[in-house]
Length: 416
Image 1 (cartoon, rainbow, N blue to C red):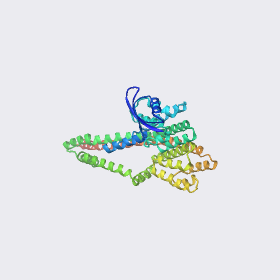
Image 2: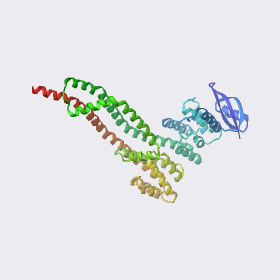
Image 3: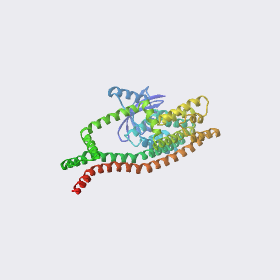
Image 4: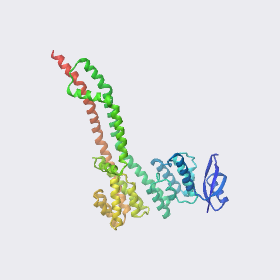
């Protein structure tokens, strides 16, 4: 089949262009019209739509130095997947479903991705191959689930499984974030309160005490010294902190920094337990979803390793995968690594013995989802009073330091 590059008009009169695949020019016209466009010019080309896009990207990269591909946020990906799944489940072909989504004339990143996917499908490209054009949006997990659905002839079921999986991942991520929001808010407000006292309140008291000629107690002198230091060198300290944060962020992108930081995360009380429970639930959910959709064990473990955020746990999965290649079971090398808990590996061993790994992984997922819920509740319950007491202690301590000279002066006057 030949490829035809076309320039046309949409029903709303907008200029459109692309590449379609057909046996002849008249067939290309019918394909273009099926997309809802009116062809203006059609020329035969040897390039596919993907090659045309790649060449355009190279040209722009040469002129501007870079160009970012459109990318969906997780929320947009969830909505796109759910709508596509519902349309395909209703009996639409994948091409017709994508054309329906593209008809919204959305100029955002989502709209551009949907338009490209539709054009690729029209040319005969499989959905899984088309999704690989946007690796920043569609992970290897997503692509492999779609490819497994295409191979088994159950693409609607695969898309539904993708929706369920990402909805649960989004929910789990929301739980972890919710556990961090309150502490972050309290610490931010407390920090701003302390800075405000140091900059505005303490200096005014210092002037008053100086005029009174009062002898300041040791705690008050320390507070005044800290306030003077903040006024004189606060901006310099802030600049140094910004530079340190920038350096730290770059260092954490290196493998050494990432490894040390992720190992430290696992040792933090309560928060480390939350991170571990979330990682174990993600491991079992992703692994089970892949196996349920017909992906082989070794490729599935490779995909799972790439999708786990914590490199310590991800490396352990990689080492277990290497041992599975040598003929060992999955549960045994995971148990030997001392990273995964005994309960998880025992339940996994039961699944291997019964030959029903997806079901065992489903039970593991529910177990650690429940543990994650409990840990988040415990975290918020414990941290709320602790942070309030900590902030109150700092602010109250500063207030006491400011009141000590007044109390001392009052005692002196009462002695006369």
